Image (tube, rainbow over all chains, first blue to last red; front, side, top):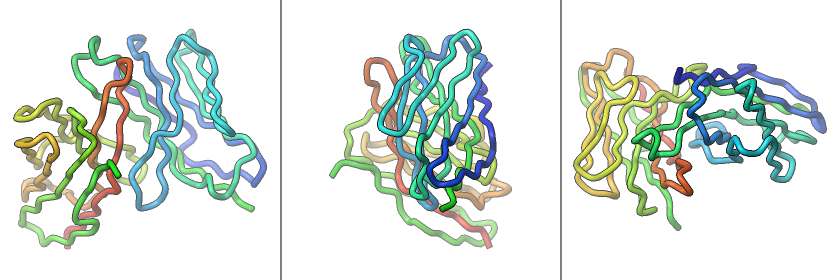
Length: 116
Length: 114
């Protein structure tokens, strides 16, 4: 019930293409869905996040699409650039007053390589 | 600049030795975490602390210990009981924004057991 399943494990996209990473969850009590970006040798950093009361959120070239009925959400990177090459993690959590803690449940990550 | 400082960045240890990884934050966050990262395994929670002098085991706490004597500091000790300690260790802290748990990570410490 606490798992977040992420796919694909790795992704190769040509420069200018669209990168799509998918995540699925089981626990319907989750109500916060962030994406983190991690460059090699660095810690992850928050990229973009969504709440289930909206179906899409866009920040620059990055868009989260959220399908509450299917319990799925995805990250779309438009016009992918070599500088986007990184590992991306989806995550989910409940607001702390529901969960009694601040824990995030992470997917296993997707290694994105954008080739020139 | 506010952030999380992890040290050392690289650490080598002989089998049978304990080692302590440092994590300090100046973000005034209440909650702090330790994650372990292995290739293909994602981020696995070792321990977390929501307030000073209190901490909880995560999913893979065996062979690890922590303390939280100050709000700013959350050191992790990798003991000799940890069977496979070679990994990348990430410390994080978080703040609740409108109930959402927003994590800030440090740059990580890479531990290699020789």
